[in-house]
Amino acid sequence: MKVKSLLYVLLALSALLLFSCSVVSPDRALEVTIPSHPWEKVAGKSLWYTLKWTYGNQIRSTYLSPDQRTLRLYVPPGETVLIAAYPLGDMNPFGAAVTPLDTSSSIILNQNDGVIVGELLDIDRTVTSRLNYGLISKEVREKTDDYRNLEKVSFLRDLQNGVLKETSIKVVSLFGVDGFALPNGIWTSEFLQDPGLVVTDGISPPIQLPEGVFRYLNTEMDRVLVLIVDSAGNSYSYLRQSLV
Image (cartoon, rainbow, N blue to C red; front, side, top):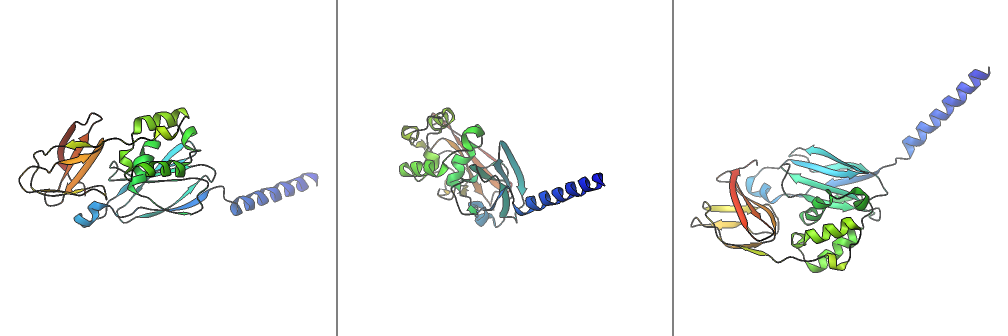
């Protein structure tokens, strides 16, 4: 009789525990949306994405098909969550950072935040999990509307060392990229805020860019121009087959 009574108690406790877990979810639900990419309008096609996000000390990832633009994520509620969506798997990402103070559950990624979030994904999670991203974004925005102009070496070093301050956020000067040989046509930038390159005489127009990798799509040629600007202002370019 005592064994049966003990068994009933254990079954009752197990049922109560399962009920409690089903009622109280430990995770926070986020509705994540990726906006339209500049290449989609000119190509008339949707892009696929690789989505990455932090969960505790992990970086999780998933594939998003061209017809999928919204995804529900479940993340820990007490930490800053980094989210980045990479067009075609490895291009400059759309991104967002969600802190415990953010009350909205609907998140729209953007390219500006993607610049910083893409870098933060490589930082020690003991630092970024408690990051007040809203304050950092505000400080950067007061100095530049384009987060690509942030001087990343000092910023990331100070952040990693736990000594982030106002002087850690600096704006770099743009580098002049002289015209170079490029087939005629319209080359559409992957960045929403950048104008395309209109080439009529086989030479690209001169442009100014910060350090980084920049891609331009020519739909008629089915080619992508990849333009790389290094920290010294030197530029390199090549053409590759379009994956759009």
